[in-house]
Amino acid sequence: MGWFSSSSDTSKASDGGRIAPDRSSRERCWEGRDRFFACLDQNNILDAVKDDKEARGKCGKEVEEFEGACAKAWVKYFKEKRVMEYNRDMTIERIKKEDAERVADLKSQGRAT
Amino acid sequence: MASTLKTLPRLLRQATRTTTPTIVSSRTVPRLSILQSTSHIPQFQNALTNNTNRTFSTTSLRTRAKTMGQLRARNSTGPFSWKAALLFVVTGAGMIVYFQVEKERLARKRIAEMSKGVGRPKVGGPFMLKDLEGREFTAEDLKGKYSFVYFGFTHCPDICPDELDKMAEIIDKVNEATGDPSLFVPVFITCDPVRDTPEVLREYLKEFHPKIIGLTGTYDQVKHVCKMYRVYFSTPRDVKPGEDYLVDHSIYFYLMDPENDFVECIGRQDTPESASKVILEHINDWKREGRSLTGGQ
Image (cartoon, rainbow over all chains, first blue to last red; front, side, top):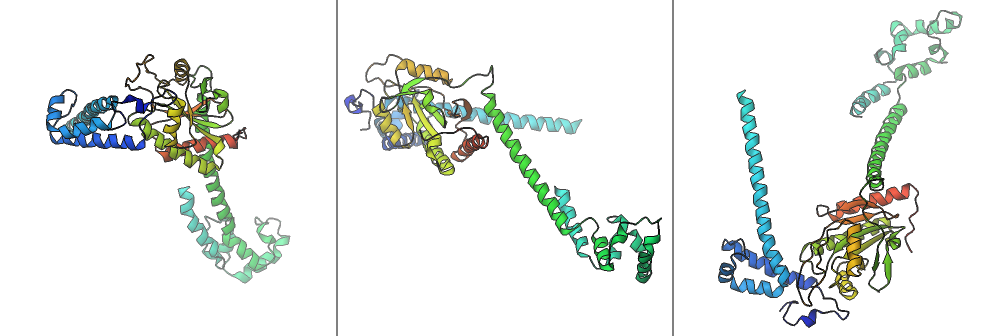
């Protein structure tokens, strides 16, 4: 299991702090995340929080690995970030398209007059 | 500049025609008309020797040349010569470069001054925290050198580790360029003091760069310093043991000058190259203005 396991004592520093994931466990978490998201992409699932059941059904192995390698807060963060980034990209695309349409529209108007 | 460069070859070509004065156009060397009007050289020479008696002469300067050779040489090139052309171009280029550099320097100075002016939002200020050895660390400890302040927390999923790797690259680049690592102090202030104790911070920062100074404190101390630096702070105050949470925070590096005044922000969009360039420019400006930069303390 990853650094965030059931035994929370292992992640406790001697002065009472909580030991943060180091470089290698971060990388393990990111790899798990990438594999899980690749599986979601293949199955056309965007929101792994809302469509949790479907995600677990289609990508059971991946989601288990992902959640095992990352802290709970990180899992939630990455799942939400995926949706947020998708929406952001869609918005950017939409604005670009609208802009292009407007430019084309203005150009055709300019030619007409 | 471009037009000067274009005319240069022509000037040089003219400068090389030393032996055939009559070819040189009267446009570039107006005083040469006397030569063109005299078709026979012996005749001209005659006129030259007699000239001392001719008070109505319009070419008194010309005639002081002692020999025909000197006269020809002077007339052929007129006021232009290799050396003059070269001097002109070099001086011109030098001035352009100088003005460009000065302009950029003043622009940077304006940015730096802007954050010092009255009525401007002030970023940074006095604070009291603890370093990783448990010693008190205040804003005074940052004076005399440029500091590079970053706020974060060790349980940060993806952005802070990326930014800290960038910070490590910037530190190396800046220190390599200045040759004095004590001039530039990278600082990491945690926004999550409950979990980020000195021991946790030490282990965490070690993985990025040994020079980064980690700072932590009580919840209120950290909240205060975040406020001073205008950092959005969302750390929950009362966390149950073992509870897992994330901290929202601003993700800017703050470059502070040796008087601990805010200079510039370095953000996500900056690469290690662009960031270290900006920092080095500010450090060099400070040095050039002859202001104290103690470091080494």
